[in-house]
Length: 336
Image (cartoon, rainbow, N blue to C red; front, side, top):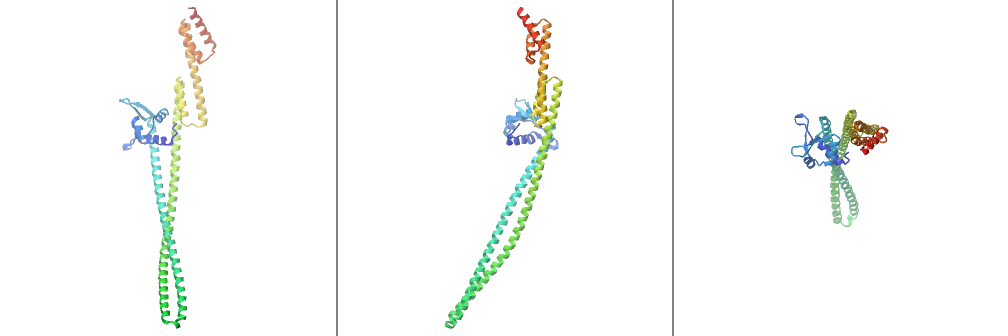
């Protein structure tokens, strides 16, 4: 199995993009050289060997003596094309989510700036109020000075003029503050609307993320189904091999099943089948060598029979008939 997530992604890209051509909507397998795969897809040789051992890829040798790799069967084209389609959709959704996030951040930044301007308008309004209070204070001073006007009409008139100027200036500041406050309120309302829009877009992004998770689960289910189909095929092949007494091929098929993530029950059953197949292999080796040795012994060719009888005892030690036949042949050989 391939455990490195980065290597898994490179293998997925190789199988979905490099080894399949769907020009004119007619999917077919492609063969790529080993050097090309390593250079342009970054997949290492060990991963290619694992894919071949799991019957996902097939390796051939071209006319130049180079290894080429292709999908092992046309039945893999459809699930790989579906997986590629889902992967492209996931990548598009992730890109849209990122763009939505950036837009949301920009809107939040704009809302913060609008709030800052609103606070500045409030500060200006407070400053205008302070100026107004100062003007009122000056008015009180002017009234006091008017009381003393009898001592100096010219001084009182000048103070009165200054008071009026300060009042006018304060009124102008107040009017500007009121206009700034109105503008700030409008900007604040716009900021609130922008913030609401940003929240709606964030919710839409979350819904898109949920859909992406659903597609990911569907892809995992498709992979699980593909592995189950491959395990079923390998189990059926193993049964045929056992009927044909091809025990080594059957064992390899069972071991390939164990590499395709079977469940606990299926894993225990497959392990038991491997043990039984090995026992059948030993029994078949025993019977074949025993029969050959016995036949040579009956033909008085004891020297040729001894290796077969020894091989039979290695497969099934302490078999009485075989031990006796070996003993007889050994004695005859020594007498000769």
